[in-house]
Image (cartoon, rainbow, N blue to C red; front, side, top):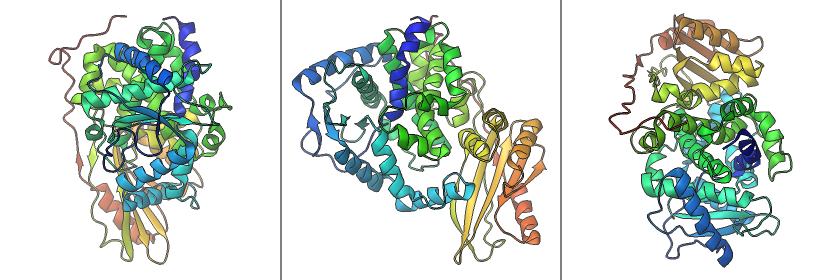
Length: 454
């Protein structure tokens, strides 16, 4: 595979900004395709088998059962998205996610996440694989028929390969079990999604180029330049469906939508370079990445292990009378990047300041009469990492009260609190216990992996 052939494959990679990760629906129907999803035309169904064979070849997995496929329009897609949210995202989890994002300033106070997400995703999704009902569907826009051979630029083919790869993953590794974390702000859950999406994106690119991307001279440099500013990548193809809606979305949402496809792809490339398909299958079957840090820096998963530090926040009820805890979670390196960039740091500085993340935990507290307090403890790999993060977060006008309470620990508080009570809370957070990981490196010999040929 040449550098030029990879460059020609980029339009399909950008198209995958619009591809759905997969839906999980309510109880299984008697028919293989649910109401609102129509079977692909005969020619499209036959063509799909050709694409399936290509996906099997480049991913190294084989279909263990037939994969029903169809198409649906945007109205039906929105129904499916709403149904999925109701079935698999508890209202209290969605409310907690919304309160957390607003507390950090990552989404506007006026944004209703439950209404906004289905609208945004309806404009973005080009296809999906349903992990519960075991079918895939392509989205018809403007009266077109997805899945028909000879559509012109082959974009439908690439989306089909992507979703067929999800079907292969599911039949081999059980995606519902793998992606069981239903916390929308889970850093570990975001990492697993990136594994799943990155693998499907890499397979899609391989099929289009008819070669393995990790073996393409110059591919690493080109991808690095793309990842340097993901917003420019999204802006590079303004005529794609949903491009306007995507451009107007809050930065944190854009970063998270892009992350699984782009950084997830580079993670899977690195895994295959390190240990071939055996190591990639091991990530799915036994030992998935545990943080967005490991996706961003694959060597921290497969070479010199760096699992997250687990921070345990104290119960602050006695220190915060009149408040109730509304949410708790982990930011992780990816969300810290978005936070720092959105807070005024240029992208390069935000990236550097988020590196060296060791682990974190935050909690959001609310008053009945109004008012919000955010408390946050973060652990860093080195004292210099902690100082870099502290200096970047505490920019003028940020509203953060930030203190380095130990060589590698930073405590940040945001919200109105009397000085005496703030100091008491800070002291409790400074003493919060942290569990450091065992960091067992992957044993390539034990799993039968060996470096892929280059």
